[in-house]
Length: 262
Image (cartoon, rainbow, N blue to C red; front, side, top):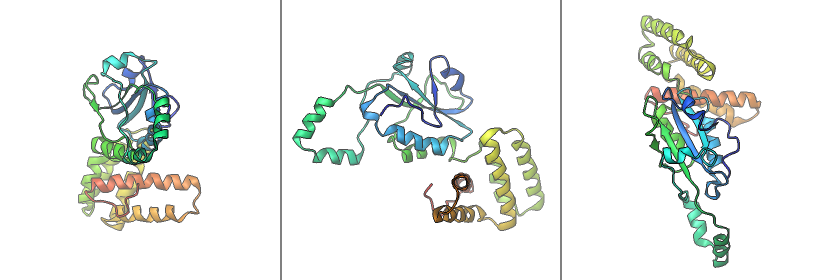
């Protein structure tokens, strides 16, 4: 369970670069760890899944820091040695182990490692982050982060405009004004946020053409296409990304998508 390897979507930071990235302009989740942690075997896999969901989120940085190489963070954030809590399945497996298995594990046991999972809120004092106490699983992380920065696919700058448009799109004058406002905001966006913003505008147009439940219907339609197979990987990835955005848009509308497996 060595977290020092690359985890796509997470940026490796050190004592020189941390404050340049985690500077309050965006929220951040920080994973602080010692390498070769025997009790972190599953965490890197879970973090990869989290990054797949939130890696493009324009309001969030995903970072990790090796505290063995950057020991000042240990005192800075009060990072202590502690065991990762066992998952329920692991605890049940332990109960079924024989005495020989337990003795073997005792021989192989290592000292608990220093670790911390911290959340740095946008605009907050970076010296006082929030300790993330949820289970270290993809689903728990996604729920936690969605509550903080919005669902994967959220473009913070366009949330208010989309919410207002959803309520007023049947009024041609108001709709036209809100589209113009969204187009103005879009010009200020960059990278993945810009491409997500472009899809926001496409969905806004379709709300007017196809009705208030377009977001939920399109989410389901793309889901059936993904589940049906036969798509090229590039198209699969694009449809999955669109569904992520549609799910976020549905939450902005105050609705839930019917088939909620993302």
